[in-house]
Image (cartoon, rainbow, N blue to C red; front, top):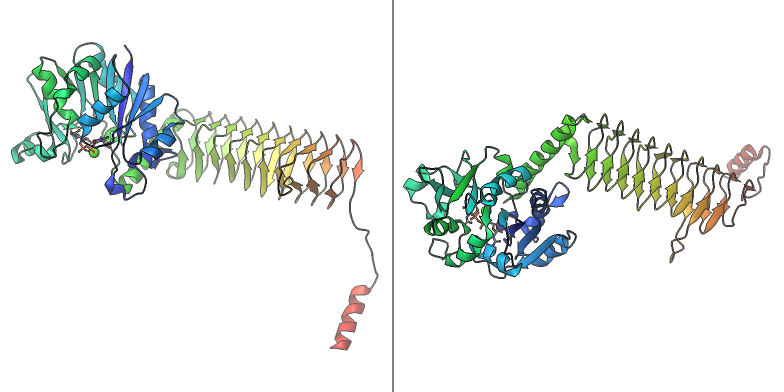
Length: 463
Ligand code: UD1
Ligand code: CA
């Protein structure tokens, strides 16, 4: 039976004090809502429906990047029950089970969601509710149970009598599973007869029971995964929890992390065995790092593919491929589809953009290499630059195999330097260089013996 996840994300999140909707605030490298869509996907949801409202355009624009997600707009915020109804109708959900998730609860585990949906999928219950007993239950909806442990009712904190608020300690963290047929048949029976005059999804418990259906409770002890984000302080708290979880997983898989408190790794990153992550390292997006690498200190990689045996010291990489046994840094910047091939070296204060650096080639010091195809075994002298931009176009520089480029060389693209050519230091290369040739562009040198002291004496005499 297909499973649909409905993610409630229409709220504004007043306590964030932000121009942006709450679910667009980032936990590690991605907005809160994307943690929830990811958990739903991993739990096996075939359809993911996000209810948007406040800041709908911003949420929609972001979710356009997740092809399996549909957005439904809730134009009036009439409560959680109303939001679920809008989603069911807007996305025409008719089959299987429905998971209802909070868009601001990013740490929920797919395994917990699978546990939650199980009693509904098996036909044992029409609804299942995740429950836990927090140290401080204030603010949460409270659960009442019958003798068999089924849920009979959820009472919102605001609707509790003082006696109920005191006695009922099992809470509703806001995650539900429903049989969609039962939900569709009876959601119209929700009313706004409560303190907040809202349609409460929590009232589905009593409604389904009145039709003879059972509501199962699925308990959990891991309070961390149920935490929601309502303030910036909570966002920071959850960020630290997410970081620790990921770092602990990596260490269990054989990665050394010298300082887990300053090492930040996104949820989709993979790191191979015996790789060492040094302090102040951030690995984001779809980055993959192979085995036996040393990454950091002070390295940030976003959407990079890194082979094995690589050393990346104080390196920033965005959208690049780095093959095995490459060494980078300290202090280099690789971006825009750069591809650094096996055994190459990119050194200090070097920027590489949209370029292919061939096997074993070296760009050791203070260079900018942009829009360049470089063969293998090349050496680029310190301070050399590909002048790729003429003010209008980006032009390519092509460098063959085993070329030696002397220091402080300007290569004015488009230009080609053939295999094995030699370019003298301080040249400005404006014409193609044939293979095996010497290219030298340098003003003639003059030596005037004894000039310096003669000049000094003259200046003193004139003073
Ligand atoms: C809800 C539960 C409460 C539970 C708590 C856990 C209800 C009535 N109560 O209370 O039992 O303990 O969550 O956090 O459901 N939303 C919409 N559209 C709306 C209203 C809400 O999309 O019209 C979204 C919000 O953006 C939020 C989620 O639903 O992501 C929960 O809404 P919120 O108003 O925060 O519910 P609570 O009062 O916290
Ligand atoms: Ca809430």
